[in-house]
Image 1 (cartoon, one colour):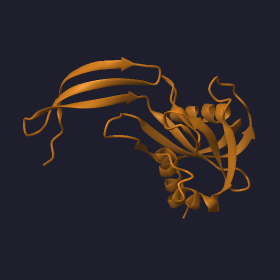
Image 2: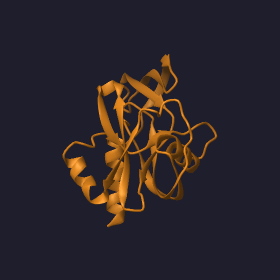
Image 3: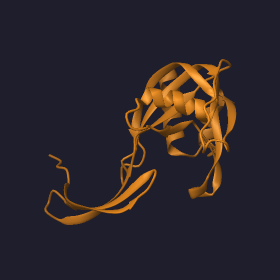
Image 4: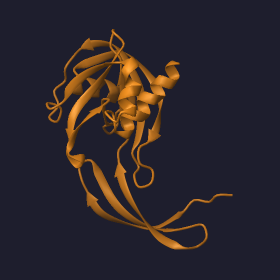
Length: 177
């Protein structure tokens, strides 16, 4: 039977706006002691957005850590005491300027479980109504409409290359079949 590792101690190395970094000392089931680096991040939403013409609304934005513009689905962190579905509504208004009248849960996943705690709730949003909320970090986002039929090609070609977008879009496509 598999047994979990036991945390013996935790040292916080960094506390930031979006993440905290820890080094935990753990005891493995066999008794060996080792360390684990942990990036703590709040839960998030990742949203597949479909318009009336069966286009997926993607965002093109510059991602500093990788030094390039990426094509992604809308996503964002869930605020304290905010429900995931309310976060979907807020994020879509801030990032793409639409309020979704229909929201369906698709599932969820851990983005980087080898070293991080981030969990993403995946949703499908449709029946869009123009509605803009202003947020300080969303002015550099370009909305790109892509026919659903082109999504698999964009993933396999590497044009969509971030994990959350690939995972959520594939969950959507499989459930759509």
